[in-house]
Length: 62
Image 1 (cartoon, rainbow, N blue to C red):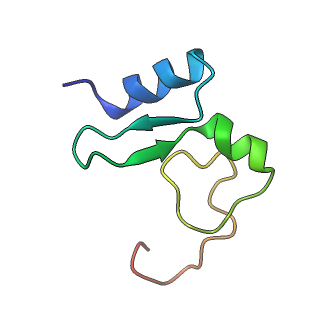
Image 2 (cartoon, rainbow, N blue to C red):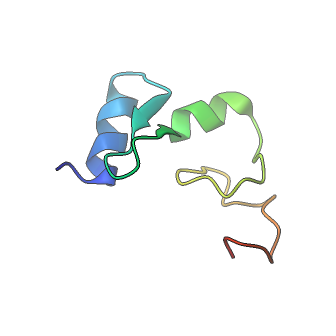
């Protein structure tokens, strides 16, 4: 099974906005897709290029 970092790298190299997480089967946004959005959405995304600046400090993921 490929690791998440490898899947993310390959997706970015191919110009893709998403890849499939092998454990869950869910689509995961790449950092490139987030950059197209232009801001941190606050959802604690795996590949957030904005340092999760809009993610609440408390909650289920923090």
